[in-house]
Structure formats: structure tokens, C-alpha cells
Image 1 (spheres, rainbow, N blue to C red):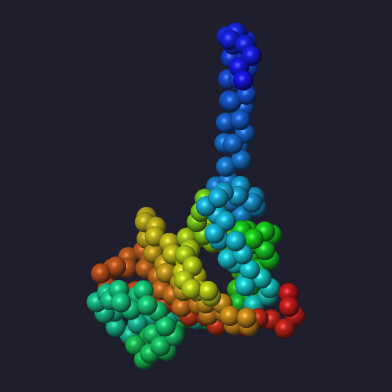
Image 2: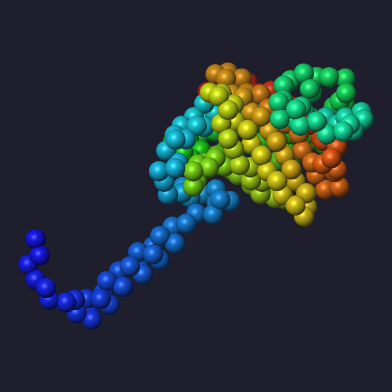
Length: 221
């Protein structure tokens, strides 16, 4: 019920404007860039559908990551590129050109934010590279951000079925186009993917293919 028809004073209007400006400033100050791996983004209604999307990864995984190149670069076939299976990297059309030993550690800080540590060991050179990152849900999207010594890599994700995530990035100058299919089961973690890099012709099949098979470590960490 209205009890007064007295108009607002100018001071009341100024006070309301100040409160609004402060609220807007507070909201802007809390915006977290996608490449931020330290701060948990503010949860939105659009994020809630992704609750615990990364939880199956929690723990310590060990295995090998393999890099392949084709014996002959063929014409592009999207039916193959976007319907990956293990037979592609096991075919005699590819040669293995490099491999590394990998330890990956995942620790969920919330149902939407997971810390990541990756330790890559290159047997040929004896070099060990440690990277830190996050898997997170932000603004209704899935993101994987990995901060390597020389670059920060950002992939956008999508869930396929109960066990598989597709990670992709498309960047130019320099060209970086990647597609990874990651399937996580209770004790195994498989990655199949490909990439186009600077100088590669996207009208052809990729010159770089990837496969990894990790096992959950018995230490449970």
C-alpha cells in the first residue's frame, strides 16, 4: 500500500545512483578472464548443467603420449576427422615420430573448477616439462587452460555421452587448429586427436596426429 506521494529528493536519487555504480563496479571487478587459472569464476545458471563434469578425472594418471605423421598427406575427409577411433592411429598410414611419458594430476576445487598439473618427460632428450592449468566451467562453457613454459593453451570443450569430452581450439597467426577426443573410464584415459599448425593446408588431412593411453596410478593421488 502506498503511504505517501512525496517525491524522492535529489539526495536520494544521487544515493541510489551511487549504489548502482558501486554494484556495477563490483560486478566488473569480479569478471575472471578465461585464461585465469587461479580464480574460480562466479557460478551462473548456465553453468549448473555441467556440475561434476570433470570429477571422473580426479586423481593421478600415468602413461604415454604419441605423435604420428602420415606417410602421405591425403585430401581432407571430415567423416574421419570428426569420428575418431583408435584404428586411425593404428593404421599403416601413419608413422610414430615422437613420444613422451606423462604424469597428470587432477584435483577438483568445486563441481565446476579443477586444478591440473602435467609433467611431461621426453626420453630422447631427457627433458622434463611441468605445466599447470585448470579444467573449468565458465559462462556456460567448458574450458581447459594449460599454462606451459612457452605458451598458454586454451581449448573449449563439449560433452559427448557419459565418458567423453571433445576439446577444440581454432587460432590464427600463428595457425593452431586442434581437435581432441578424450574418453575417461574408471581406470583408463584415452586421447585421440589431430592438429593443423603454421604452414599446414587445412584442405588436406592433418600432418600431426596424437594418441595417448593413461592408467590411473595405484597410489590414488
